[in-house]
Length: 45
Image (cartoon, rainbow, N blue to C red; front, side, top):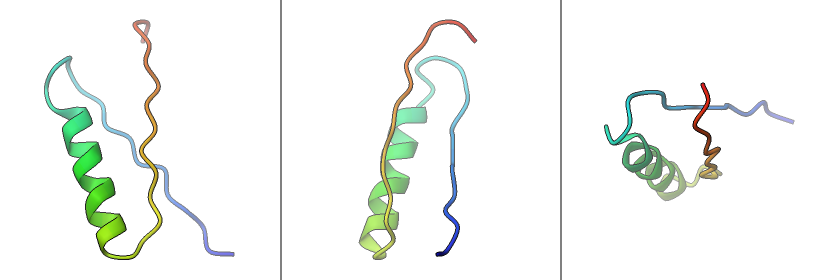
């Protein structure tokens, strides 16, 4: 079984992390690669 990758985006609030993550998932899926968008909300870092 091939290994997967866990990609995360870090940054300040409202800097576009969710937008970029969703675009990446769309591009991967369009290329025929399995991809899942997951979000882990939390206010304590």
